[in-house]
Image (tube, rainbow, N blue to C red):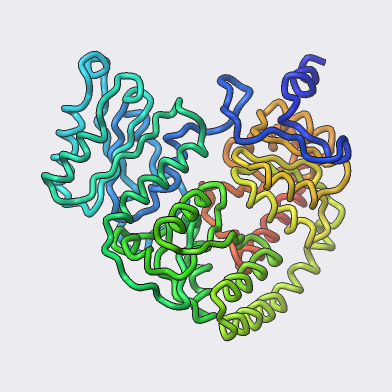
Length: 446
């Protein structure tokens, strides 16, 4: 009864069950609470997610050495060139620096990195300690940029200043500072920027390949497998396509205001969303030839996947799925993917979903489906048991929970090493799902 009291009383507004009221009343994008109530990551974490995949950028973490352990080397983002993004540089602030200030250490770190590595761009992250002691990070970065002649961009990301979504916005502000240094150039017809794909397991390459087959030129990838030089040309694109709406809608709006680039939301997870996105891009560009090629590509890929989907419906039809992922766009695509193979989504939640995401989710799921925002492990366990889910889709933090409950697990987070985007991703998704859900181990664990 104690756990149920936490779920149904203290957490009212964060949990919604379809059919319990006329519309979605769930709260979202609120400040995280300390302790076990929230699983949201900090502001600094959100900023690193967005900026770290820039392959030749240097990242100096102005704070304790522990914060610098958060690097892209523990993630699945791939590079086709430089790999400096896999490193973190830190000012390693100590107790003495908390008392006397850390600006001198930051200047020394900037000087050393510039002397030894000759970087193209440096991002400097202000962490929690810096937010407390009040170092003037902007002033130090400005002085370094004037002396060394390269962009040195502050990222104001003290972890306690909000949650992961705030970190996304701080990173987008830093990107706009970088883009503002680029010389103005005319727009390229039939070209796009891809926003919000971080090239996990090479997914950016898959998406770019589809667009090139349609005759659509990709100007800048923001930020998976991007280079600093590539980003400086982002203002030349005719259209921004936003894959991860939670992290990049803010940047798309700022670029539209400052550079006149329109934008659309897309998703490349699942057959339905991938197909609609490719057609939508061609239509937004006003390119009939690209739309024709997109439809031909979709027809070929869908035919090739039909035997795989038929087999998956035999093995997985009627099974129940629970979803707990980072962004709302991913949860929406997953619901559609499960529907394509005859599975029902009985629990769905996100860490950073917004009201419009939950409205769409509510329109897709059946009566009785539980919708969660910023759930904690106790809540996930309670509803997975109650709804008798056969598989949990989540990230590294949810894996132990699934195994504890004797439930299959599918990794859909940044740590994975297999692509789940595009038509290639559908094949991988279904294969992994079959292996996990139908593993004989569950009869012994349960």
